[in-house]
Amino acid sequence: MWKYCFCASQGAALHEPVLFRGPLLDAFPYAKKLGYDGVEIHLRDAAEVDGEQLLHQSETHGIAIAAIATGLANRVDGLSLVDEDDARRRTAIERVKGHLDLAARFGCPVVIGSMRASIPSEDKRERVLDRLADALRQLSHYIVDKNCSLLLEAINRYENNYLNTSEETIQFVERVAAQKIYILLDSYHMNIEERDNEAAIYSTGKLLRHFHISENTRRHPGDGQIDFGKILSALKEIKYEGWLSMEYLPKPNELEATRKGADFARWARTEFP
Image (tube, rainbow, N blue to C red):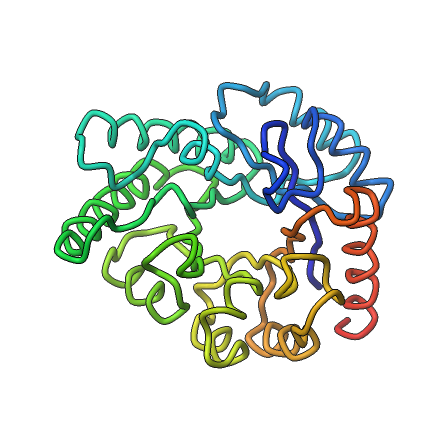
């Protein structure tokens, strides 16, 4: 039922929850060898990669691109969809459009997480929310006829100071009221922010289009306290059909951590066919 992938990047820092670091073309045979269905790629700029080569690798190895994340554009270049400076905000929007053009070739979504930045002070909250809503509407209009979508990720308060819970994120998506904007939930962030993980999944329902797997320790499933059986049961109950993406720290090393994710996938396929 579900498909499984891991996060890959050629430019992520060592503290990033990415399981494959190196040339992205090499991630496809690596995923195939370990029994995954796809890769989630984290890109600073879509111009850094050759879409035709990525497509060739995807088709050659039968490994899909599950999603494209944009966070490196914020963490490396400081770009934000809510920047007070109009020119820099337009640059951020154009950067995401590049990600969306690439995603359209693979029919996958683009993740908006840290690209929304944090609210600098409470008196600026509504202006920040308005700018983010406007940017998302522009991006939604841009992809209305493209084979891709946008995912807004609920992120914990220590990394972003708004849109932390599923409820807050649902309300904001409804406020934006634009096409092709959905939600990404992450078990690590949920463990910090949600009162009830299963209830958060139920309430997100059909808006949930991507799910990150990570323990409360930010390590592989099984290396912490999260009850993934309950989470997967809730996903099955809402008839979730998206990806389960391994987004956690490469501990004790990339290979061992990625294998642990593959072990989790085999367990889940048996327990939740």
